[in-house]
Image (cartoon, rainbow, N blue to C red; front, top):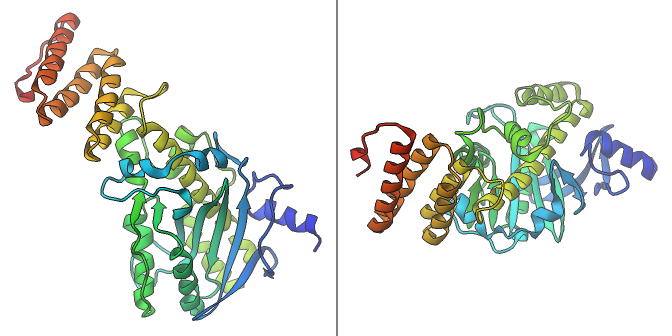
Length: 355
C-alpha cells in the first residue's frame, strides 16, 4: 500500500480530525486489514501497539496541543491536593483503558491501554492492544515498560477504575505492577467540585460539549465496547475494533484538553469565570495550603456575585474560610455585607448558624 493509502486508512480509523498531510503511522507491520500495529518484543513475548503523532497545531475542540504543552503542569497539585505536581509535561502520561466489563472480577480483561504524552510541542498517542487473552502477559509487560518511563499519571476516574483493574490483571498473571507514580491526578473529582452545581452531568462526554467545545461524531457508546471486542475474538475481524480505537483516542485527547481547561481556571481568577467556579477554585487553593491564592478567588467571587441569593451563599463560604484562618476582622466584614444584602433585598434570615 502506498503512502496515500496508509494516510487515508489512518484518517478513517484513527483521529478523524487530524490533517491528513500531517498524520503518519509509526507501525512497522499491518495487523489484519485495518489496524496498523507495531510488534514489540517483550520479556513475556510479542505485544502489539499503535503509535500516532499529533502535531502541535492539532485542535481538539477549542484547545490546540501546543496550548496544552505551553501551560505549566505545576498547578496539577491544586486539582489533586495530596499529589506532588510535575515540573515538566514530559514527566506525565495520560492513561485510559478499554475493558470487557466494569467489575474487578477475573473475567474482566483490559484489552486496550491508551497512553498520551508530550514530545516537545507535539503529542504522542500510543495504544497497546491485546489481540488474544492468551497474550496477556506480553501485553501487560509492554504496559509496564511504557508506564515506567513516566513519574506522573493523569486519568479520568482512573483512581477508582483503570489502575485498580490493571493491578488486578497483573496480580492474576503473577506479575508485579509498577504503579509507584509520584503523582496520580484524577480529573473526575476536581471536575465535580468545579461543575456539579452548573452541569447535569460531569461525564467526560458532557464536559467535552459544555467546556471544551468538542462533539464526537459517530462515537461508539461505551456500553458497546465489550461487545465489539467479543465480536473481534469470534470473527478475528479488526474492522469491528476501529471505532473502539478512535473512541479511546478521543478519551485521551479530551483528558489532555480538560486538564488544560481546568488548570487555566485554578491558576488565577480571570474573565469568563463563573462565581461557582471561583468559589470551588478558592476551596482547592485553600486545601492546597495556598491561602493567598484562595483569597484572590474568594474576593473575585464576592465582587462578581450580583444576584443576592448567590452573594449570600458565596459570602457564607468565604466568611467561614476567613474564620478558619483566624482572620475574624475579615469574616466580620463579610457578615456585615451579608446583613446589608439581606436588608436591601427585603429578606429575612437567621445568621446564627454561621457563627
